[in-house]
Image (cartoon, rainbow, N blue to C red):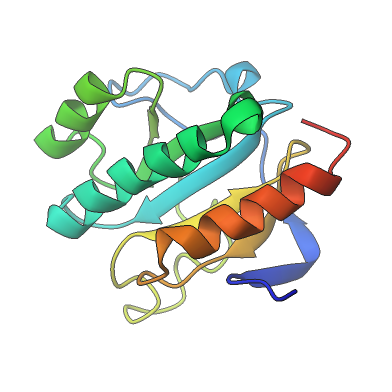
Length: 156
C-alpha cells in the first residue's frame, strides 16, 4: 500500500503547550491527549475552501465508524476569531479551534508558497507530527491513511 500524505520520518514532537483558544486563554491540552488528531493549519481568513475542508474533516471522522472516538479534529489559524470558524464551531461543537505561536508546527513558517491554503496534518496520541498533506489532497486519501494508522496502532 502507499500513503497519500508525506510521512515525517522521524516523527516530529510538538510542544505540549502554547495553543490558545479563540478568546485568548491557554487551550487545555488534556482534551487532546491520548487521541489521534486530524489538524487543519493555515493562515488568513477561512474562505470557501477552508469551510469545505472543515466539513470534510467531520465526514472523515464519522466514516471511521467504531474508531471515530479515537480521533479529534483541530483547526489552527492565525485568525481563529474569523466568523467562519465561529460558524463551523456552531455546526460542529466538538471541533477544537486554536491559535498557535509562530513555528509551533514545524514547516509552517518556511515560505508563502508552503502556506498557501489550509493544510491537513496527522498527529499521533503522543503528540508527534507524523503526516503532512498538500492543500488539495482528496478526503478519501486522508481517510485511507487514518484507517491504516488506527488499524495497526495500539495507542489512542
